[in-house]
Image (cartoon, rainbow, N blue to C red):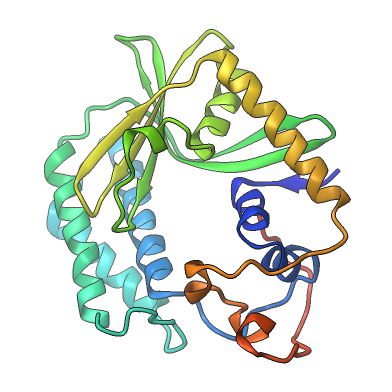
Amino acid sequence: MAIYSHSRLSTFEQCPLKFKYRYIDKIIPETGISIESHLGKIVHEVLEWLHRQVKEKNIPQIDEIISNYSKKWEEKYSDDIVYVKQELSQKEYFNKGIQFLVDYYNSYHPFKENTLDVEKKIILSLGEHNLIGFIDRLVYDSKKDRYEVHDYKTANNLPTQEKIDTDRQLALYSLAIKELFGKEKDVLLVWHYLAHNKKICSKRTNQQLKELKKEIIALIEKIESTTEFPSNKSVLCNWCEYKSLCQEFNCKPTKLKQEKLDIW
C-alpha cells in the first residue's frame, strides 16, 4: 500500500518528471532549499511553539516570539539556500518573518481559541491507499460545535475566495476530521495569509467531499499506472531543486546520490 500526500499529488500534477526524481528515484538534490521555503519552515515552527505554549497556559511575550524566531533562523540557515529573487537580501527575508509574527501576535493575542492540537497527523483512507498529512492547527469551537482546520501561508500571493473554495489540501484534511469526529460535524477551513495579515475561510459540503475523494482516488490510480514522466516547463521551474538535471534547461542527466527517503 502506497502512502500519498497533498504535496506528492501536487508534484505529479505540476511536473511528472519532478515527481519521478523525488518519489521514485529518490534523488537527493544538489542544491539547497529556497529562501522562501526556509522562511516558511521557521515561521511555521515558531507558530507551532507559540500555540503549544498557549495550550500549557503560558502565553509568551512578543519579544520571546522574536527571540525564538531569530534562534531558529540562525540554527537552520545554511550557505546553500537558494535565492531566486536576487533583489531581496537575507536580512529582508528575515525581517519579513518578524513582521508576519508580530502581525499575527497582535491580531490573535491572547489566543483564546480552543486549540486541540498543532501539527496534527492525519491519515485518510483512499481505497487501497492512504493519504497522510499534518494540520498546522486544529481548533474546536464549543459555542458553534465545529472544528476548524487552520493553515499558515507565508507566500506573497493572496488567492481569491473562488480559488480558496476549490482548494484541495484543507478539504482533504476536513475529510479526515469528519472520519475522526463524525461525518455530520461542521468543519471550517481557515487560511492565514501572513504576508497580508488576512484570514480567509471556506467550507465544503459532504457531497463536495465525496466527489473530491473520488477525484483523488482517480488521480492516484493514474499515478500508479504511469510509465512515462515528461517534464512540464513553467515559472515554478525557477524554484525546482532538480533544475540542474532537467533537459528543458539543456542539462545532461547526472548520476546523483540516491537513498531511501521518507518524503511525503
